Length: 266
Image (tube, rainbow, N blue to C red; front, side, top):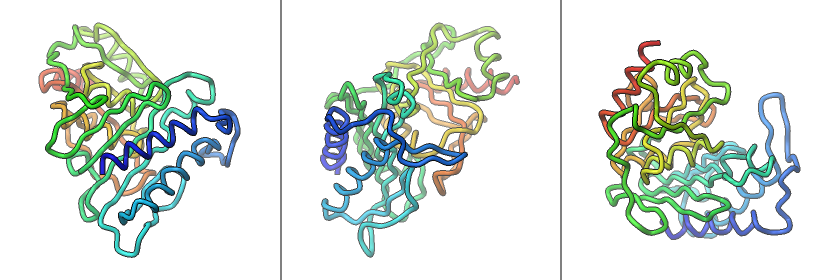
């Protein structure tokens, strides 16, 4: 299955490097959402590969209603064809392809993901995991950092329309993170914790939808990291891709507790 997921990612990446890739063309637009042509094309590539694979999938994806590729699917796949669409449109070379496969009867949570892949669209870096088998970056086993101290950590924080007062609290009340980063792709920001690139990722404000973090969170769990909501509780199951979440990911329990304590002060 991981071979299939990587093949699908490589096909999307090849498309992104081709002449027919148009970074500014809009496929559909509504007051709530804009679908870029490259999002739709990437999704078409993935779905075509799933159909041709011979596996049966129930498909949950950002741009289409839920559907199946076979009469009695055995697996469910959650797809974010290109996470970081605004980056792509503006010429920022960071975006991710996110694929998470679960048994058809399993709740849609990171702990139940059987196979996961997050690929960086432009660099080609691949993060992947199989449940119980550990996490890997470009084929080499990776793990979350051992950082326990908020004052020494490098944290990714999503500022995009998020809870401003909570973010101010995180950044102005001691202790504060030593360094802060943001890529513009929640899938990439989240999975960076799995390799120790980030020590933590924080997205508070109930704005994040499941397709952008499910694969990443399962890879982080396999790398030894901690994943929760803003209260420190396990994430509730994803029932559809309109549900919104807050997310706290940390490399160690001590760092996770320190972040949750800062959030709970507000």
